[in-house]
Image 1 (cartoon, one colour):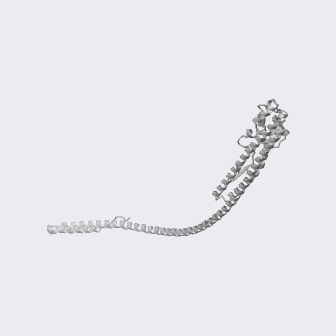
Image 2 (cartoon, rainbow, N blue to C red):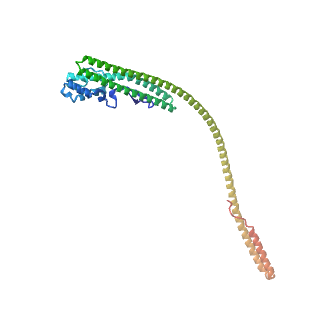
Image 3 (spheres, rainbow, N blue to C red):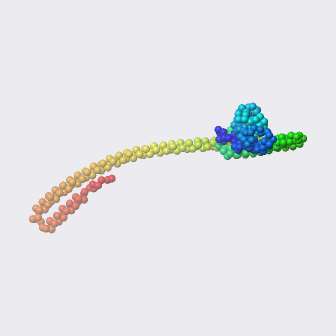
Length: 361
């Protein structure tokens, strides 16, 4: 058996397979026997002229039929119906080939009887482990350990099956040697019976060894079940811890939501105050604009007053100059000079009264 992924990527399914399904071609190792074929040719069992060196091609047809349809219980007639080319063989040659097919079918059925219960048990363990992993996906580390245990068990089972295949091959070789010895020494019945008993004892010893290996595998499966139960207890404890952590996080979340709501209310109050200040600033800017317009108006009025004062000053200067010309005949030069300085002082005093015209920004 080999592993194949199921729909759930975290689970593993063990499929039941036969020797003919192995990736390595076991045709020559388990079915074809070159030495046996040569011995059969020497003893005259391969009568058909096409069966000599081409006998292996007929063996390959039978092997491919087993590999394709997995039929291990065919009688000679149904076997010929499935492989019509076997009708080319003579009856004795076909009988030997059918015996060879029947012998391999016995190996396949025996191997299936020994390996299928193990694979079924392992499939049950894998399905149970997959259900546990789906319910507790957050605890990935423990799942990895469980998967590693399953892989180890699968490797052990594969190793045992390889050992079984080796033992079966040895059994086949031993049985073949026994049959060859029986064919080559028909006249020595007592010797053949003794050799057969020796071979049967070897096969029994091998079967006992295989039974012991199966018992050891059963003990390992029981140990694996105990470890899986311990893992279930650890998973339950981890689940309770995770639930407590979730409750704590929900409490902290509620506290944070209340704090955020309080801060949001304070922020809304600040926004309202800012809007109020903004409206007051707009009102102050409007009042400032009105005052600036009033200042500009006063500046214009100041300019008009200055112009009026200058015109009045010019008229007074003209009148003063006329009066000064009339008084030149009756006043001395110095008094006239003093009057001129007095007029100058008056002019300066008018200039000093000029208001500023620069606009206030």
